Image 1: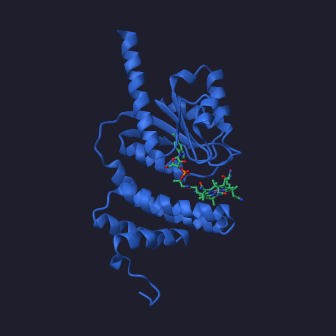
Image 2: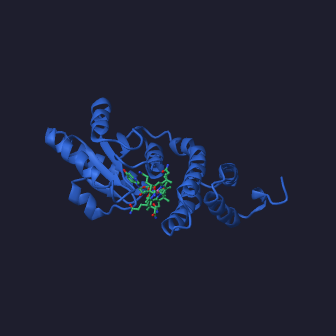
Length: 234
Ligand code: B1M
């Protein structure tokens, strides 16, 4: 350890979380991974580490990106540091042993390469007992339709982080309508620039503010669908 290095293990929980915000800002992967492991050893729940340390750190990065203090290369380093922390938490969040409650295909729309939010939603959905098929970023409508055809999920999830790419969600939903497929799936959308009105306007079944809302909404809509099917049969 050099003189400048901070002994992360010697910090209190609050100091460590603050240090993680700084390290995420500086894109320090190794430090983020060490700190995640220290918090886990101290008995922190993976979800709390995710939200209080990583997501909050990324929010701070977002503010300075918006204000022109940080630029794409720096934000990419932050994103990679965030992902390295998430990779430790992913198996822990998925480890609930819960029975599978449904299946979701999820992807970021065409023109958009942001994937941290989508990955987080995937992790939380897996943790809640969903099978998740992640088709990645920059997806044209054909990719979504092919994945629906191949995997026959209950839910289609779409993510968009740019005001210029969010309208593409409507292109996908309209194409599903055109092909007579719309009613076969629950369509959930999310991403920072969206809101409930937008979700309604494009014909989605729900707008998810964050990953926790996505899980709740997915469970709720699947339960409603099952009840409806049961009522129709009975
Ligand atoms: Co970009 N970027 N970026 N960026 N970037 C934003 C989105 C921006 C708001 C920054 C800013 O100006 N403040 C801005 C968009 C402005 C706008 O459209 N109004 C922006 C811009 C402009 C750009 C570029 C155009 C910059 C440039 O090139 N000049 C460029 C575009 C690239 C492209 O996509 N074509 C670009 C590039 C990048 C990086 C590559 C550097 C990097 C992405 C790396 C990666 O994802 N692998 C990046 C990042 C990291 C950001 C910010 C800083 C952080 C996004 C993030 O990961 N947040 C972002 C600022 C911000 O959002 N405040 C910004 C953390 C994540 C956990 O939250 O993604 O919101 P979020 O996901 C949440 C919810 O939204 C929801 O649940 C998630 C978890 O709680 N959710 C869903 C998301 N998807 C869901 C799907 C669902 C359900 C819920 O389906 C069921």
